[in-house]
Structure formats: structure tokens, C-alpha cells
Amino acid sequence: MDSTGRRSGGLVEGLYKVLMRRTSVYATFVIAGAFLGERAVDYGVHKLWEYNNVGKRYEDIPVLGQRPTE
Image 1: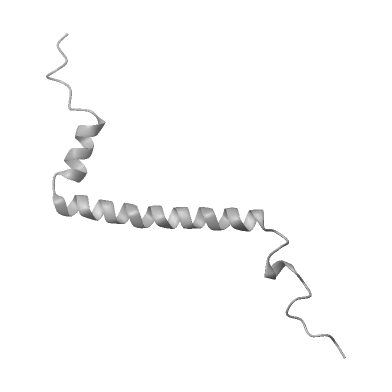
Image 2: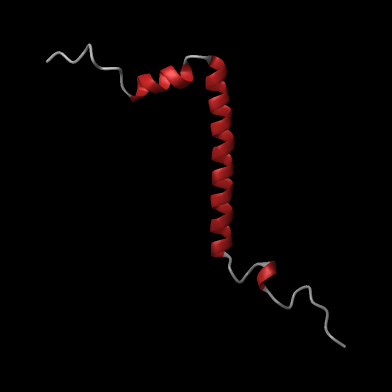
């Protein structure tokens, strides 16, 4: 019942083998993660702001930007 020879490692060791073994792959992963994370936060905050300000935005007020008819 000795399982030490059969274990291939855990999640941390798997991430090390895939991402952190080479500096170029690790740096690319960090930069891409930061870019995608920033985009996700920006999208989420924008949607939250729109949800909280429905009816108060310039686009929601029908009389703004229209000229009176003669």
C-alpha cells in the first residue's frame, strides 16, 4: 500500500510543470492574466454602474437632445 511511487504530484506541482518552469511562459501568463482580469473587472463595474443608474443616464431621458417642433 505504498502510494508514494505512484503519485504524480498535486495541483501545485502540475502548475509548476506547466507554467513556472520557464520564465518566458510565466511572464506571459502573468501579463495575460492581468490583462484579462482588468477587462473582467472593468466590464463588471460598468454593468453594475448601468444597473444602479437606470433612468438617470443621458440616454434614458427622452427630451434631452431633441429640438422642439415648430
